[in-house]
Length: 309
Image 1 (cartoon, rainbow, N blue to C red):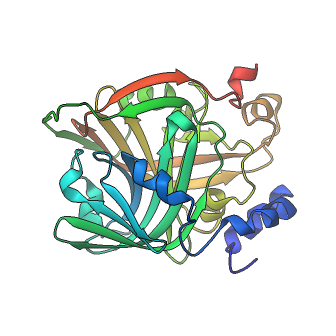
Image 2 (image 1 turned 180 degrees about the vertical axis):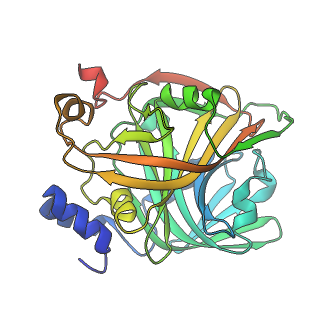
């Protein structure tokens, strides 16, 4: 298992008693893309990308582009046509990869409750951004809220402004508390970055009085890529997206695992896993005018814990 799962993943699998289930997932993980992933990847208009800044902190970013901005010339490579990207190209991601090219990638299509994860090394040549893929695998579709995201027919130029801080303000806390979806970036001890998704009914995320964010860990695929990374490296990044208003909220900080949270309240909130993780914000960036898309919410995931109450 050591060539598929790192020490942090193996440790969490043992703690949770899910080692044998995790072993069954090993064939999913490859050192390249799966052939069947190519049509899915090339159909996407969104890409969620994790990167590391010069201070060693990690960030998670959203890139939006016209359908066809993503191409997959081989199982070892993904390409972005930068001329077809319609979101803010001054995002911190584009600065980070100039000095640290390791990128965690998530392709997430909420309308079909489908997602695919990969990581690799970025390199830019003119209007083309390429990623040499080192790992790829499909990810669990649970807790994805169905939502259709499309680009408008006419290109609309939006004015971009930024708000930044170290301590979350009320507006940002309200956004987080009311979110049904967000994205998380984590990093292994050796520096690889991974991007993933978390979802639930509004209210599944708590913001404590001290500003610490607390999130339940629902049942998933038992590989514990995200929790395993946090186990051996606390650096993490969160991303919240407001498609209707074209805004993103990026948080960079550190995460900590909480096991055996078995009070009646916590046991229910966690979907009976008794697992949570917390996040302490070090820096945040709110981008107004980040992108312009059309969005239509369809329904919540039937796996959401609060929906079953």
